[in-house]
Length: 190
Ligand code: G4P
Image 1 (cartoon, helix red, strand yellow):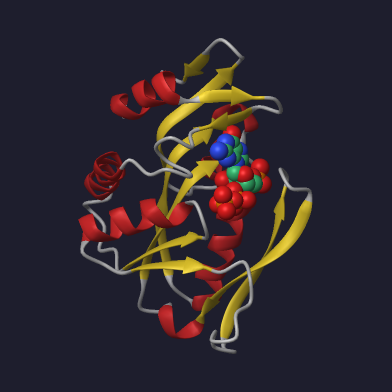
Image 2 (cartoon, protein in one colour):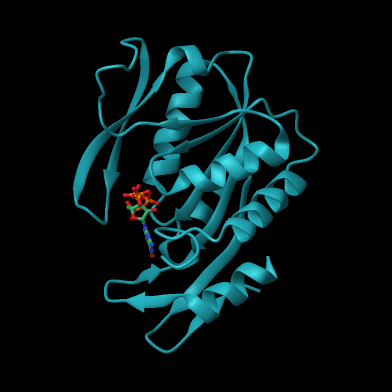
């Protein structure tokens, strides 16, 4: 998605540790129209699928999942990282190791929101090491639902997870794939 690459080049900042900061439009501040453009593009890419649910994990994935859900006219569900008192006890769970935070946390989705008749599209803002996506895939499997693919805004291609998942036969559609980045430049996969 050319517009996303241009936005990254214009507003993104490369921080130490190979972190791409996109807080001005995708993470902390959301560019509403642009988020909706991403949602529409995701819906266009997966228009051949009979998707019934969009699935993401809190927190940064939620805006994109909602935009995709609006464009696809289906509900979006997010996995919670923190147990809350009002959450059902009937949950699907998966352990996710965060490479960035060096810790394992549990994600959970209430069983009432995902089931065997669902066709699920996983959406997330970043695909780095792929642990969040793998955790969400485990939850889809546990639910007995069908995964039709994953839509990612920014894949960090040099971290390899996207290509590993593609090699496993998972459909991964990333709207921008960063091949390399330095303080001065960000290069995208052609
Ligand atoms: P993984 O999910 O692909 O395995 O990624 P990893 O453990 O490396 O990343 C942990 C968190 O950091 C994830 O968010 C991921 O989206 C985010 N992340 C990874 N690389 C970058 C980057 O270059 N830039 C930015 N802005 N984020 C990155 P999270 O912990 O689930 O947090 P959040 O969704 O609550 O923000």
